[in-house]
Length: 472
Ligand SMILES: [Zn+2]
Ligand SMILES: [Zn+2]
Image 1: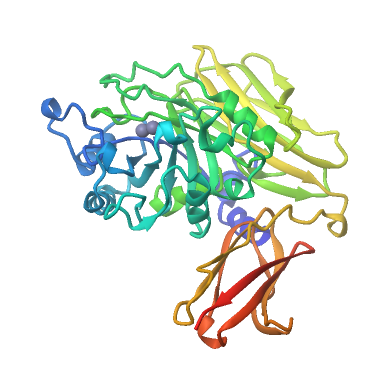
Image 2 (image 1 turned 45 degrees about the vertical axis):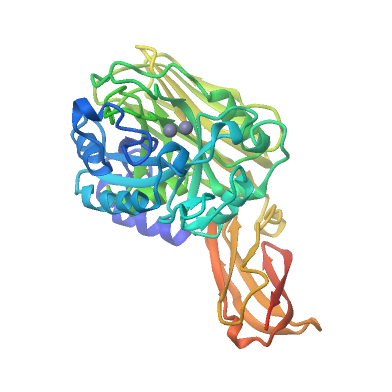
């Protein structure tokens, strides 16, 4: 992590000379991840517009103002128009529609509203579904934990809530206990969504819905989620119903850079189509999960190329897992473009995020930075959980087994396989340093005789075990 930061900083030295802090490597990209075309239940105006495919829809979006990327997130099931063959066509058209100045992303909107809610899924090029003949990977209907386990098995994959209600996803935002599986799979929940059936193409039909209370509740429960903004287009309006945007901070406008940035929660929600929010803690960007003995030193810089002033910039602070939503801890005066704050807390974990209101009432809501102020590396608390998953299990000797896990912070990791007598028979990782985030390791099961094994993982001072059965 440190090495990557040094390299980025070194590469950005000419920019840094003029910039306030180390976020110069990132550019701001404006777009939306929630849209439908004729490959599910969108392009409902196709008779009038002649547009009915993802390719036509991406091309429309590429010509929209202040719109660098569009994610098409077709419904995953036939009841809403999805067919497996179209899913693959849509994926190919996203590649075709991507240019140096526009990125076409391809995801799905998974689930049924009455069966527990909608989730956007990205970073996966397989259709997850439950209808016979209409999926690449079987994920049972209404089983959100199964959906998120499939996401966690695929490094780089992630999910976001779509127009969430408090009872959705088995009550994740409300009554359900904290789920490490969900925390690993989720990167965001929207500030606004829609209007889904608008036909407006003059950027003048903004959504007034707000799901901010769900964001606040998820953070208070301890989830590591950022805040997105969805258009949920069902007509040929991509990027033009509203000037509100999901804003992603990435080093380049490519599919890989955007997906990596989204996975890292390096994004925010903006009612304004080109406002720039730089938010850092100890020089690490929005979305970061940090641990450091130094005090948390927050910097915020706001800019708008159209010179729209901010009437307020507010820094919010909360404690993950406390159940208590964040409260304001610092506010900048009207017209200010910057805010800084050093947290007096000498220990413990907090999260921070920024709220900006512009003179025209537009709001910008930032994703958090989580900060664990640890007195020293020796006393750093163990990773709360590894979310270790072993798949498939029982395993077939002809098929390798994948271990997937999520590291909340960078750590050396040792993993090995023990036989039925507790002897280590295979080393998978020998104290290798691994960055925070999702990881996988492969167990070459063909080197092990059939039987009962235990997978043992040591990370951040904590041992985790899983049984593994290798069949005949
Ligand atoms: Zn939906
Ligand atoms: Zn939708």
